[in-house]
Image 1 (cartoon, helix red, strand yellow):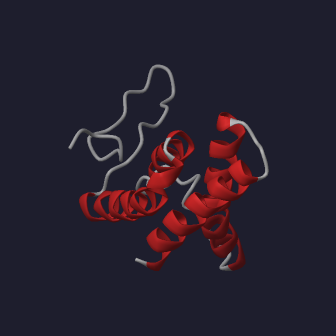
Image 2 (cartoon, one colour):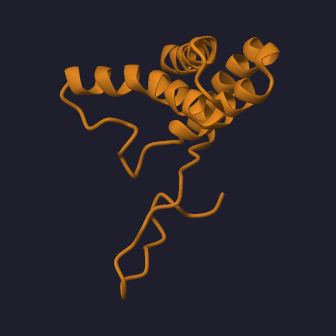
Length: 119
């Protein structure tokens, strides 16, 4: 819960701050995503865990931040709604175990227990 709130708040605030300093749209969105996911990555590194951002079995982490920061870049007045969207998207991804597609080794098909099976 707190991770999702941090992802939303820091992703949106990083995007708004970068827009305020005159960055163009794409760098502002990228900086917002990096700001949002950076706290979770730092938390996992301090706890000596593999960051959720790079674990193939972890639920969606950067995708909600990307979607929310793109919304803020194009509609800066929607910052509060974008933060709420990021939080809700992340919480739903956690509850429903949504995963991003993963790569597999050529010649080996993924098993049924792989995290990228369809919902």
